[in-house]
Image (cartoon, rainbow, N blue to C red):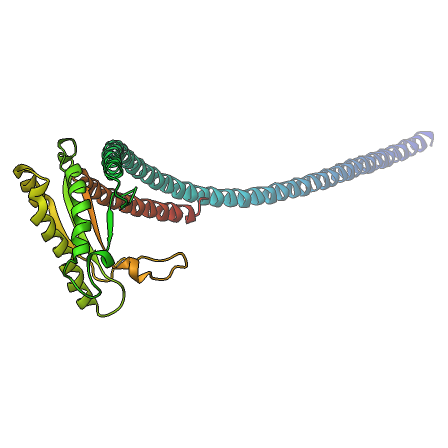
Amino acid sequence: MRRRKKSENGGFNVWRSYSDMMAGVLLLFVLLMCVTLFQAQKSYDESIKERDEKIALQEEYTLEILAQQNELDEKEGQLKDQNQQLKTQDEKLKDQEELLAQLASKLKDQEATLNSQQAALNEKTALLKDQQAQIDQIIGVKADVIEALKKEFAKNNINVDIDTQTGAMTLESSVLFAYDEAELTDEGKQALEQVLPIYCKVLLQEDYMKYLAEIIIDGYTDTDGDYSYNLQLSQQRSLAVAQYLLDIQGNFLNSDQSQDLQEYLTVNGHSMANPVLDANGNVDKDASRRVEVKFRLKDEEMIEELNKVMTEADTKTEKADNTEEKTEEKSQEQPVS
């Protein structure tokens, strides 16, 4: 009886142990599951956290990239603007270089023109010096002739009107001719016999003959009447004086001097030209009716020609200066960037 009971108790303990073991295993499994779940949850939380951090970092990185992209875009825009500005500056620089080249060429032309003008100026200066020397010589000779005429007339106690600048001797027509006549009066012949020999003898002296070009007799009338009639009258009167001079030349000139006189003598009629004015500016008709005896030196012709040349040179220089000024004005009007 006891063995059976013992056997029964021993079997009961086995199943109990097995149940306990299974319960322990189950408990261990639950614990493992709990630990595993805890670890999994922890890993999941960490991965979620890590993912969120990565997402946050990615978003931050994305924002940084976007900011950098915007900055790059802005810099690219600035670069484009700078490139455009550089292109514009290059174009302006090219235009300035072309303008500088034009100005350099123009400056070269102006320098050549200036050199040419300087050469012309030097030539003109030399010409002026020569002309001045000739003028001084002629003025000296003319002054000497005029002084000699005055002294000779004063020596013979003859009062005659001689121009101190030109040496012209004026003879009033009222003394030489009757009104509106061209025939010398006796009084006129006497007057001519007094003055013409002295005037001609002085001019035909050897010291002055080498400079003498002409002995001129000019006739003038007043402003009354017709020009053509007065022209004929003035010519006839000057011719009458010249003819009388030729008639009496043998009384005071030798044959050589007479020949020289005929070569130098010139007769002109001027009608009513160059009337004589009184102090109030009105025509003095009595004084306008006159005959003038004067002389012209040889070098005076050359001086007149030189004056013409110098006048033409002045005109050309003035035109060149005006052209240059217009060119400079156009150059100044061109804008320089």
